[in-house]
Amino acid sequence: MWIEPLLELRPTNVMHQLGVQSMVPVLNARDLLFGLHDTNAVLWVPRAESEAEIAGLLRAAAHSHAPLGLSLFVDGDMARFQHEHAVGELVWKCTELAKSLSLCPPICFHVQLPSVDFKVDSELDSASSMIMACVEAGFTSFGLNLRNTGSDDDFSWVPRVLTPAQELELALAVLLDFSLDGDAGEILQRLRSLDVFPDVLLLSEQSKVHMDTNTFEGLFEENPGLRLGWVGESNSVQQGLFRASFGECILKDERRGEAETKDLRLRLEAKAYTRALIRLKHLGLKKTAEHIASRLVSR
Image 1 (cartoon, one colour):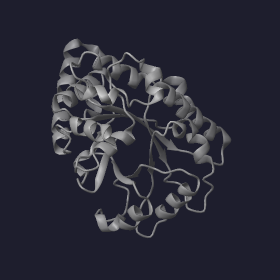
Image 2: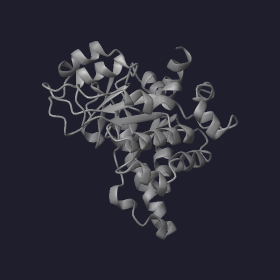
Image 3: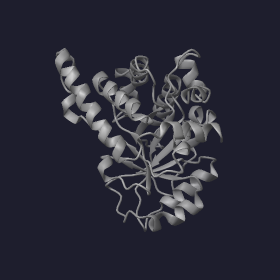
Image 4: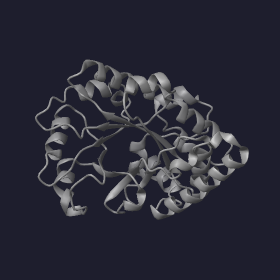
């Protein structure tokens, strides 16, 4: 069975969280990206908050034999977020629901942090605490928002904040404002000089640039292994150019009031399932789980 070799590849933090006996293949997002490298498929990492939504996404990925990522986007003050939320709730809900599946798809968990004012010690402390908590909870991909930085800024804080994730070689995505006359390339160079090598450069609709391969050719040459990721609706993703899509909300406001009735929960799960089937097929992910396993085992 193709799932068994994947269980051997789970990161240490995942094994600590789930236990050796768990049959849920939570992988480093870097490994999933590697497994899809020779395809045009786009790794899908939507937001998921409600239990019904997570259940629908999981069932769709399992029935499609496709990998799935789940995102936690931290908005606003990180210290307050940690105080008001259990950061590991997404991982716990997903892995508990996955136990009911006859064959669980490969999964990764991504956390996207808000922008950090590196001149404020308390913000750096909150970012460090958040990343440590997410590593311990079993997250396998980490996103930094560097939109408000320039190439002349101090980046020495980045490796310090990322230390727990970097020690386990977990995936890193960086969100930058990219434009032809911008300094994204210089920022990536500064990060490389600090031994920080992002797996994914995140772009969004705010990026003022023509989206084609020629635009990013220089960046790819300077940053071997760098991939483009999209933040937002996956309908905007160009296959062949983007390799990951983060943060899509497939239910949006429909998840409100989920806990009111069992019938409502079932309807939300069905909607999430149906929409996820469409997304997974559109992004070229259907029946790629075995291919990922084969590439990772033969690596």
